Length: 181
Image (tube, rainbow, N blue to C red; front, top):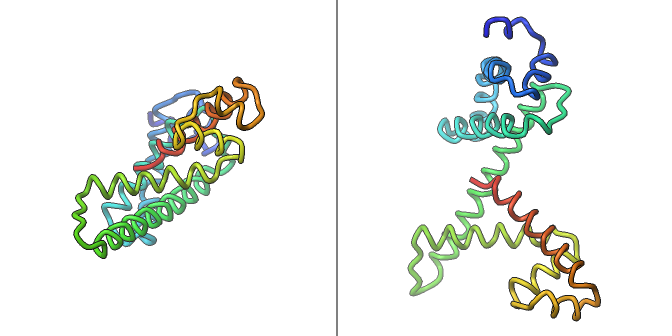
């Protein structure tokens, strides 16, 4: 493992793409302190900062074969900043949901209901970002409960095309929801 310490970042990235745990460990050792400092400076919360750095490294390992990175330090720093921003947005949404729940008279909101509402908002946001036909097919299928045949007829497309749009929408949802905490 010591020989990895001598390698430049570019060589470590090549080894990482090939699945080298030693290269990953060396990248972690080189960058975790500075990434933690970045996360903490933006979040002002040590626990959140540590979680964000761990998530960024987990993502790096999980996506190692698909990533094309020129500068690992800049990539990781940007990933941490983006993760802090996403965390901030999630916290803000949760606070808004809790606030909305507090002003609704007679409604008791427990953590599960808040999480369900938060998740539904996340899904709605992802669906809104889908291409128009994918979004329409998804809504007709999931919200309206229409069959593929009914969707195809109402949109003037083949059933296979409707299925392809739904498959694309579901894949996008699955991908985006996996990145949520």
